[in-house]
Image (cartoon, rainbow, N blue to C red; front, side, top):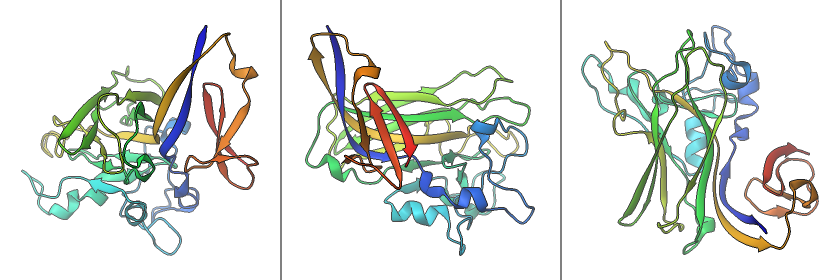
Length: 273
């Protein structure tokens, strides 16, 4: 006997909406936005701050994030050698990669709060949060000792889930996948889900003189419910029908002209039609 899970997507963002800016923008020095992970770019990588006007007409990522219901987190006060608090505003400590997010800068750490989970309605069970992430590395391929958290809050209920990676220096970049089981806390339209550095690193991490860094990248954030169903025989992914969903989690019978989530058995992927 085997079991498989049926998913209902409550929230999903792969940040592909950062196109076309991430493919066309260059700063005044001529630097374009890097795919740090895909290109294994460690030295000279350019990840503009979210307040930078990278979109045609000068629009910036921070405003678009706000339009989508996100809240940006960061230090908004001065500390030690730091003078002007605007230098550590949320739009400054969070940045942009090649269709994914960069969280935190040297010394000061950031984060995001997801939009309202309207599709959760008055409450869902068996909820999960999945995402891809990786710490950032210096030009010498030395990885930041990033410790990050997902904070799930609903009324007085609060759970903190910590994730970190001890990556050997000089290793190539790769995405690390996480899937957090939220059993035990109610997930509804009022639930607040926060991604940020841990309390040890947020909102500041040492002093400017120390230059401590705890940067990281984040992509493919999904909140979903999973219901297990037993079957009488083992079913391989190859024998399961293919299903398609749009980026809002709605099943699409005949996908065309856009980006969709392809699911076959336990495997999911993004496809462009």
